Length: 303
Image 1 (cartoon, rainbow, N blue to C red):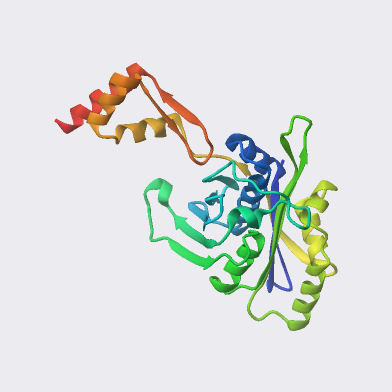
Image 2: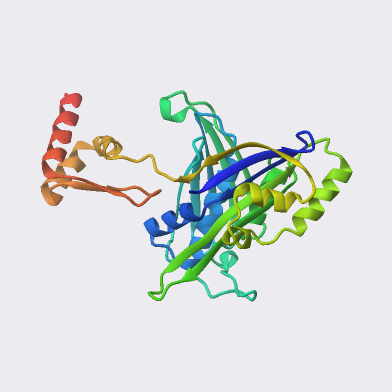
């Protein structure tokens, strides 16, 4: 089971969160049929969204959007207070050769662009409030560094961000997500300078996130590795996972919003309709009789 942990240190002057998201990233990769390099990019973004969303209130949701000029085209990830995350990329087949460090060239498929983070509350139950939206230019395209830059510039919180996805190639050529996860360590205003120096030194010595996870580390172990000798207090550890809010009922509702003339054309030419969710790639098929019923209802309302 994938999990996320939140903790504090130095009497609340240090905030930190860590997550193991191996199964979450594997599910997203499977659903979208993405390339190895896209798996790394999407996995880092999904993990980052979960970490940024740690501590969201019940009716809140957070959306991370990367708009870029690289072959990837862009990434969108959405997380909520229940630890659920979903996401997609514009071009799932984008790929690039390994970089000079023999790692996936995420920077190469992302390119330049902007990182947007949107906080919304009450949307799903109709209590919509004006969302908060922050944005920064991408500084590296490696995702983790871009999240750190966003926190420093848009939210004024100096942060260390580590995000990673490790894959192993199967004999079939498929990519198996062997380890995925991340952590964020934040320094709040007023933190003791000696404490900050100790944390910074410890974070710099932290082994790669995927190495820790592959060796069996849980989020609390990742935090211990990052904070070193600095004691911390666990606030919570909760399950996280890939989940989508789409449904057949929602697909019917969206079909019902289409102009009747177009519905008639779909009924006549296609004998039904199909809608695919961008976030999870699930396709909902509306058969001929159901579509006829929808059309009849729409026409009755318009009379």
